[in-house]
Amino acid sequence: MTLTVGVFALQGDVREHLEVLGGLGVRALGVRRPSELDLCDALVLPGGESTTMAKLARTFELFDPIRKRLADGMPTLGTCAGMILLADRIEDGAAGQETFGGLDVTVRRNAFGRQVDSFEGDIDVKGLVEPMHAVFIRAPWVEQAGPDVEVLARVEDGAAAGRIVAVRQGHLLATSFHPEVNGDPRVHGLLVDLIRTT
Ligand code: GLN
Image 1 (tube, protein in one colour):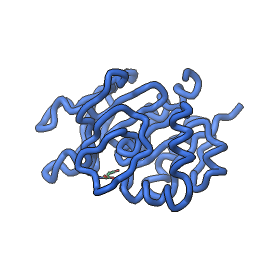
Image 2: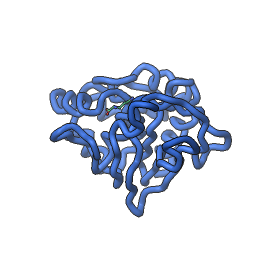
Image 3: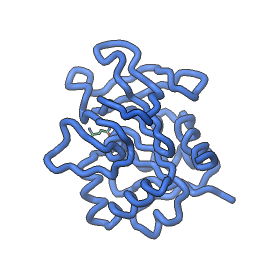
């Protein structure tokens, strides 16, 4: 049976994720309404603007359905703003900023500060053999992770060395960086593996 992986498509870099998923042999589907979410075996929450994404999810009545699917165990990958949307707690969030939650982490929004607003580099990601070329764009990092959270990657050097930038907790995967921009499908591959193993 062909697996269907949705990409939250009300805001954010949707197209790149759909392209990478298409290359993995799954059916990739933009999700804008609850009936589309119902078709999905897994979901990607892309980069974008996390406050806007949460508000649009409320407006389009996707907020509670997504929260429920996450709580029910739907494998989900959150990248950048998507990582923020999966986090149970946010530092430096906007007033009243909501998240879907599920991931027992505190995420610091726009954590890398103005100097290194956007940067890229190769990092090792647990579960991948070769390093990943990681692109960070006004990215968050994980400030604190609960006991069930597995750290998959940390920044290797520079001012932010040691900061956590990729995590997994059960069916939830999150990266501070954008795995979709270079056409490297390996992080999305980890998500597809989760459909089969969780
Ligand atoms: N800074 C953005 C936010 O807080 C995330 C940036 C991104 O997704 N590239 O939502």
